[in-house]
Image 1: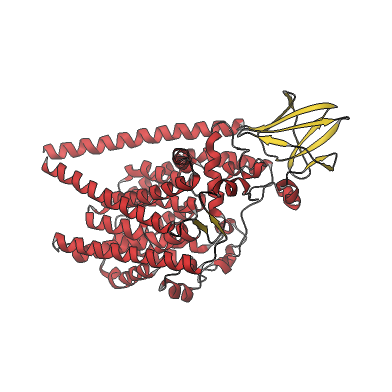
Image 2: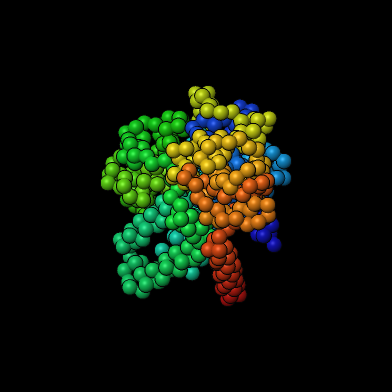
Length: 556
């Protein structure tokens, strides 16, 4: 009973600490009294994504957002893990306050996830606490949150401790952890597919590195490993097919615009400049930060006498840094799928993760025989160092960067409603983009002026015609579009500018346009739901088995 009370008290104290850290982190983000868009308009993009989820279960399109043109972003970008953000927005009554609450929650859950899975891996409270603050308050995450405001990307960071904990256990021979790996990988895919791609690459690296370990020197190990890998990939694919299949269906039917194509060799980091920028506090450089450089130094010093597990972590960290730089020949991958990566410095998030794992391990080794007071002082010093880096970097960022836009509680709604972007537009819409964004209608190729109004599910327009005509409406054409005139279903045509086109008859035409999920999309969503149920059942059974085994051991 005493042990249980002690554990409860310890967890409460740690939870309160994480809440304070999360609130302080958000306070620094909002310290200027408003939200500043410094690197891009990504936050407005994500605000629209979250705000438009009110009708997501009935339609992939919300006509009240994305400039009312029927943007299909919610098909081309996964939305499941930002759905709690919509609920928070509704409860807060404002997307401004709602986002700050959501940011606080994400930081808190990242701390909790980091602590929980590191504690399960290392069984050390000190190492778990160290890793939680080193990873969650890392310099690169700070750049993602404060400067770029890449919501989906830093939200996906929350699931990485789960993925690599499960992977570590599987590589150590505990192959029953594959459902947990499938869950973590599926959640990252359904949050930020690019991060999932990098994580899968790094999982492959660890599998290759296992060739150099003693545990892997038998065929049974590799048979079990590949069986676990196959089950993991299958279940992850089933979990995410509700996103992947509708996306591929639209891609096959409509030639759509893609995110910006950048030169990988140019956007990769210069190694010397990366080192120089890491010794400073300017997050705009997308570098490692001073604390991460200290972790690299500890690798150089301690890797030679370390355990196999942490040697692999160290190698993974160094490899991730290498892949972020121009030392890797990115020019040879420019015309491949890798160009979706855009910025090789995305690998630095993985580097920060593994560096945090390694540095927390070394600090624990140094203080493992020390008194509890000394361990507390060591953790306090690391926490103070991380918070100092966050404070100095955020101050420098806000003082030295001219904002592209300033968002306040008073102007946020107008900025959200007026925001538009052409990612995922039909390709043939791009040359005439202005006519669509300005909501121009065309009758038999001639511009006309008419009024329209929208609801979440419908785009409505009334047009009177004296003759049969073709009306080109500024609503983007995708699979799943429906239209009715005077409540009679109509055949929808794809216009020359990639928009909805209808044949009108003489007289008053009450037009209503809407979108629904295609049959294939509905089936894929059902498969994902069933896969989630199957996965949860596997995890519950696995937990019960572990508890039964633990009880049997204790009774002996």
